[in-house]
Length: 89
Image 1 (cartoon, one colour):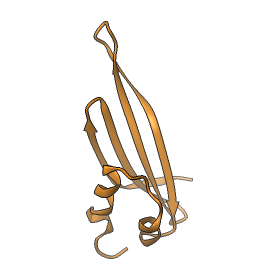
Image 2 (cartoon, helix red, strand yellow; image 1 turned 90 degrees about the vertical axis):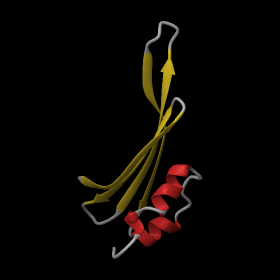
Image 3 (cartoon, helix red, strand yellow; image 1 turned 60 degrees about the vertical axis):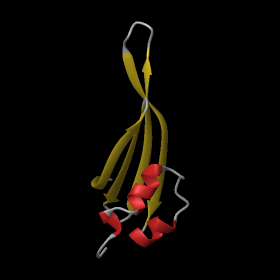
Image 4 (cartoon, helix red, strand yellow; image 1 turned 135 degrees about the vertical axis):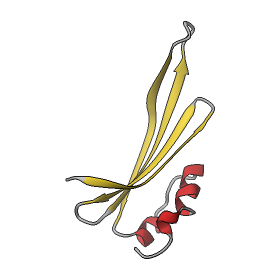
C-alpha cells in the first residue's frame, strides 16, 4: 500500500529532533507518525543520529484523528493548531 505525505513538521530541542508526518493512505485513511531522533556525540568528536522513539496512529478522518489519544508532545500541539485541520476535509 502506498501513502502520500500531506503534512510534515520538524523541530529540535538540544540533541533531539522531533518529526511529525501525516500520510494519506490508498484506502483514504490518515496515518500520523511522531518520530524522535537522538543525536549522540562521542568523545572523538563524531556524532551519530538514531531513531529513539516512533509513535504511529491511524484514523479514518481528520475529526477522528483529532479525537485520538495522541502523545502529549509539543509536536502534537503544533499539528492540532496547524493549517492541516483548517478548511474542508
